[in-house]
Length: 195
Image 1 (spheres, rainbow, N blue to C red):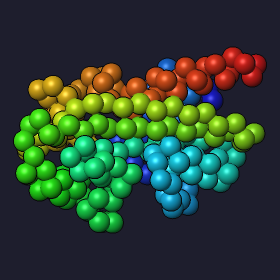
Image 2 (cartoon, rainbow, N blue to C red; image 1 turned 90 degrees about the vertical axis):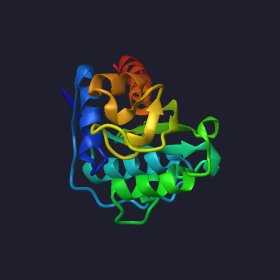
Image 3 (tube, rainbow, N blue to C red; image 1 turned 120 degrees about the vertical axis):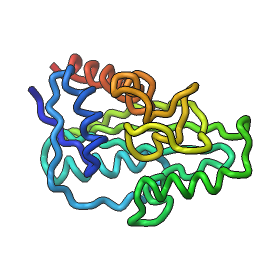
Image 4 (cartoon, rainbow, N blue to C red; image 1 turned 60 degrees about the vertical axis):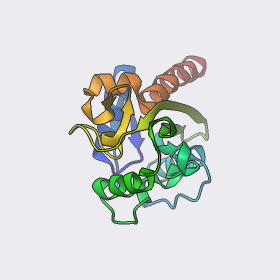
C-alpha cells in the first residue's frame, strides 16, 4: 500500500480523505508539517501551496484539499477565507453565527451557495495532479443536524443539511467526494502511464 501524506490538521477532513483513498490502495497519513501561509487567490492555488510544502518536507507524495463555501448573495464570501471568516481562533459555531447574521436579509430564492473542493497531489519528482468538485445547495435559516463539520449544519441540499447526512450520503453528494472521485481517476491514469 502506498503512503501519501495528507496536508491537514483537520481530523474530520483526514477521515473523509482516508475513506475515499483507501479503496485505491493508498494509506493516508498526516505528519508534523510547518504551517503554510495560504496566499493563493483560488482554492486550487492554496491546495498546491499546501501539497507542495508537505511533499518537500516529507519526501513523500502529498495531497492537500482547499475547500470552502461560496455564497452568491455575499459575492462569493466566505470563499477562500471560509476557515478564517469569523477571525483566527473562531469556532465552527462562530463562523455559522456570522454567516447567518449576514444572510438575514435574504429570502429563500437568494440563498444559493456551493461548496468547492480543490485537491492537489504533488509527487517528489515534481508531478502535479489536480481535481476539483462542487456541490450546489443553499444556506438554511438555522443549523440542523449533528454530523459533519464547518458550515455543514447550515448548508442544505434539498430538505436536509450536510450535518444530517450519513458519511456515505455526504461522500456521494459532497464537493470533496466529487473531487476525490475525479482525483481517483486522474491518479489511476497517472499510475497506469508511469508503470
